[in-house]
Image (spheres, rainbow, N blue to C red):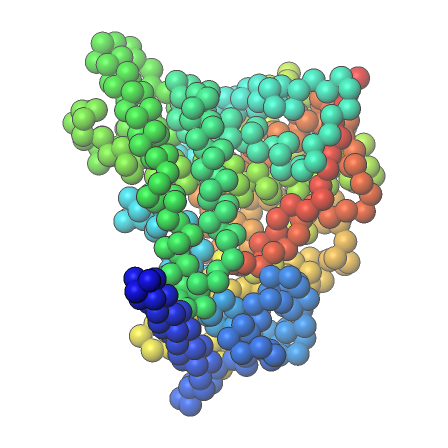
Length: 503
């Protein structure tokens, strides 16, 4: 009885302590700083909760109304943290001033990389450079390999569809295709079709998505508490890294053995794993026992996760728009047939892919209209504060996001009727970086896999168009819903698609 009372008292004291910390945190963040000309905090009704509920359930309207009332820069109180939102005129401040705003300190990036892929986080710039260099050197040489794996995976995971086949979520139609291609390309032929690895990554993605979209209730106390709880199972329970390393070591030993046996006659594979093994810092002295398998596993995992989550989500929006917009189908299908004939049914180089001008524009427009509402947050890392060009100031430590919604729905940047889908709107490829299209970032921290992501999307949609007739199950539905747990990300809504064999 006494032990129960002591335990009950302890829990009550803990709740009071946590509540006290949350209250102090709230007043600390929302207090007026006399010396700084801070952006206005948008009005809210419930102290401590702030704009959190509207950010989750009515995010788009919250951002639009805040912009109309307060201008292009303002602050929202979300999950126990003040986040400053800036408009199109401050893009240069946020994306080009690396000494003032740190991409890697953003809450979303830290959650994904620091707590889960700690080996890659130790030198993230170098880790990402590996991937950027790989695609820069090899994308042209692996085009045929990507295409053959796309065709094979479509046959496996979508099927012949002699009878109409319904996918209740457009993402489900593409997730396995993108995973199949990514694992073959990143881990090699020896491991790319391994069922254990395939299931491992599917489960890892599921756990990752749960961690990423978990409501940040503990962030009202401090975001550190949320990060620890959200990533606990991935860090301490999941054995995914050990399984990946086990398979990587087997492949490495096999390749080193073949190289030693064949000498100059050995032809190295063109996958990402071999690209790492060619680096003397990762594989010194060509000794399989000295290979930094932890780093390789982390970097490969990051990019396979990206392929199975964000890349396949983006492509699924384009797939849904393709099924929905029958007015654009004839031109796109005609282009696909012409290119297929010119290339004899097989892409050899990036030049072949560049001929898909109409499909590229269509994909870019689908990306634009289904984009996140806010850009990935960056943290102000100046000594004391930062002053924007319009005179507003924010303290060091503040998270800042770009109002992407304003950028993508602005006539001055996007042309007439920016809220409507127009397959001919764009005159530049989806991979081109400019201030009007920030899907893959801007400045130093552009997505290192953007060319691969667009290439895979184009090849996949190209072969789907040639093989199937598509239609949506429901009319006038949108392929995404905005749920603002972190950065108001777009997630698939009711995007059911019917596949039927193209006779």
